[in-house]
Image (cartoon, rainbow, N blue to C red; front, side, top):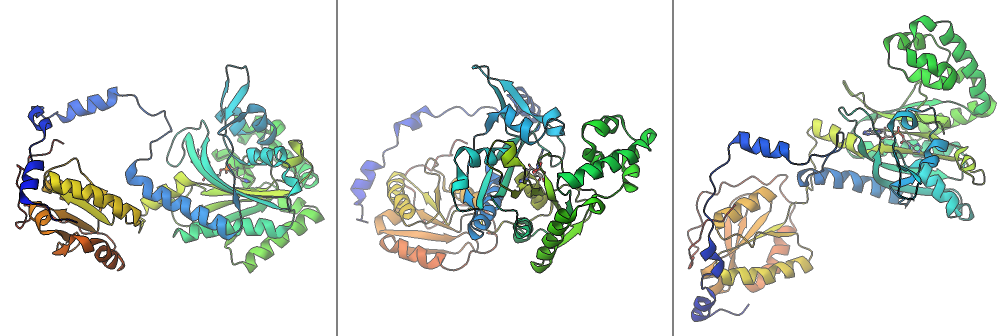
Length: 488
Ligand code: HAM
């Protein structure tokens, strides 16, 4: 960097005209006024939320874990539209399910088409498999997705109307090893994010097995009709397997004595399930047999499972899935057996936050650039670009003048080092490096700053940068122009 002559500096250091427009400080608003303003502004819809910058590191961490496992297990990314024809979900998820009966965001668009915001993605992945002739590719086809889904559910802890799922689908194989590998991925995702989970697993067999079981199940519930809820009375004819899902006290008691589907599995279904469990043992995936697990979507057969967190009060399923051998044919494709699972990003993040889970890389900047005076600002603008090209995560607040405010911003962002360039440094061709963890500062030749920073950044970052109290400005800095208070 060429040294600036004192005269040049003086010339460029004239006060910018904008300063003449200094605004009168507005009187401070009371808490009540602020709350009123907030309440009067438009709000997000019920059950939907903003993901604020402070929470983004959780989302990035969770998404990256999913993407990494997809790469490691050979799944290719697919994105399908957020809206689909309503008929897709009626045919796949099932007309008698809660999702279709009560929870879909459906509307008729300007072209009179019946449209639904997707409540889940499996149906759309199967549609894409058929539409794009993926049966011509080597089978099975393994696909991975991530994105928002919409269900008009009653908002409560861990239950949102816009939620985000990541999912893994394998289409074109009926081998039980596929079910086990899918469950293994489900287990690994949570394990690698530091959450202990157990897989609740069951088999609902093939159609033949289910037909006989449903008869026995309905008989059992009919003989206890007085104890069950009104909804379940309807389920007796509409969708008997859903009887097992009811949380009403009377229905739970009737379920405890209900026949179990495993006793009704035919040879094919039994063999398939036993082999899935054997593979799970081999892969050391922890599971728990749950004879009444049926899942809330109609397309399943054979294996069904849900991923539950281990520990008290952990009652929300983190993910769920299973086999759906009939869905491709049901939606008009050549028969192709399939299996998959998806998990809720919102829920896992909720658990992580409740358990004070620390994200190591929160995307904090390595370097913060702080400047005093216009010539320094210009040098820092150029340096910012150089650091960016070197791949060094750099933050700044070029619009601020007061060093105190800039150092506060550096602290807030969690920068490891702050480079401080003042009037004296510009003249000397030097720059100050302040270690934000220890507060130690050293002077470095401006020309050598990039190799020097690289050397410093090669050492691991302290777990959490200790916030440094910024009481006064470092003495060694000369400021030629008034270090005017920044307007907040
Ligand atoms: P699902 O069980 O309906 O399955 O949803 C999977 C996961 O999404 C749930 O375990 C939960 O973590 C999350 N989830 C569901 N609804 C909500 C909500 N309202 N708020 C927050 N999180 C929610 C499916 O969607 C199937 N497509 C899974 C699958 C894939 N089966 C085969 N392949």
